[in-house]
Image (cartoon, rainbow, N blue to C red; front, side, top):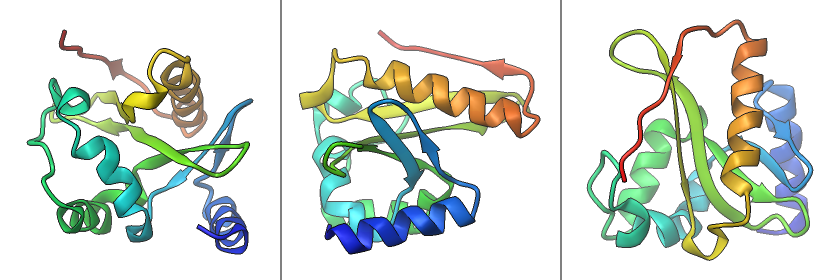
Length: 139
């Protein structure tokens, strides 16, 4: 992604109220142009092993997912270089409570990025008036 297109996306996300910045990350909605990068974790069986979706087998399926849900899902971008490394959100579940979910490219595991993004997303949703959070895990 070029610096100009990244800057334009950041401006749009800020204007739409869908931008979060942390010390090492910025979070903003995914775009179909992110599909090839997102496939790096959506198509990785180690990353998707415990997820509630089937592993993606091609970039076009990831692009379709992003086109359908991406604007409601935050991409996790490194502030230092704009690299997309994961995605997540706090979204309503079938019981009306709000649930945290995320994925992260394996190369970035164990560095605290999900903790940083999760805290920021939860704070963002609390500021929007969200209540009744739940969390599940598999392991």
